[in-house]
Length: 116
Length: 185
Image 1 (spheres, each protein chain N blue to C red):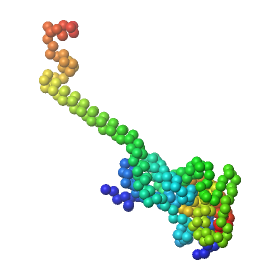
Image 2: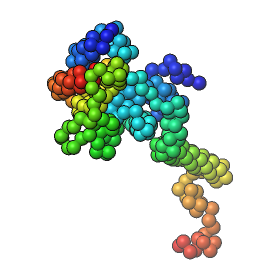
Image 3: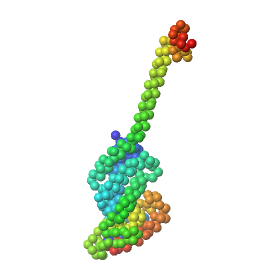
Image 4: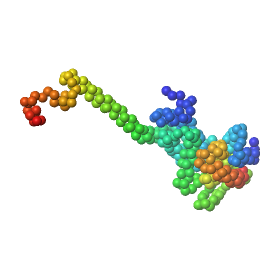
């Protein structure tokens, strides 16, 4: 294709649709095949590392907080259950006084007198 | 281990959001050429073009968490590349082309080669020079339509402009390009 025909095709393609074959011709004959440097991808990925740290640090914090909260809550709940069971075994009941540690006081004891 | 090469864009995006950097590396590999063509067609083959290309992908990376997949990833990326290029043009306050000088709205040609010069045979160079001679608003639509081969509808979508505006800009750009190309060939 000579330059005049190519020029007409080029200008035509700006406002009108062209076939795939014509499009390929334009790309091969009239458009620069630009590209970035050889190590472009590596440079992007290198710049990404600090960005990644910033981007995901917030998400990581929330995830860590969620995990820690669950672990602490589970441990606390387990301790409460164990203490309740041990209290039940040692005192034989789970009354209000037992939970407060007042069920075994002796009326003549110093603490009992102070309570009164 | 994911098969990045055969993963579609949406999958690569979701892998990236989960923190998989290799998935983003595949996105860069897939669209590097497209972004280079857009940015260098807008600005010229200059040193800053590589930096702006990198910035385009970094911005995409930042924006991926908000990417809902309504538009194609390539459309999204083109929009970022175009915006970055326009920002660069605005920042410098001048067009990068070697033969063109801008004085506000006044356009002045600088030393366009005459007919029958040796360089006139190189159509790629002529088209490249002619595109860069356009003002940014016309250059943008021409790059997307002529250089990237998008339809007018896709061009309007990328730029967020009404279809009528794109069509009228393309028509004006065509007239201007015709003038410049005829002068160069």
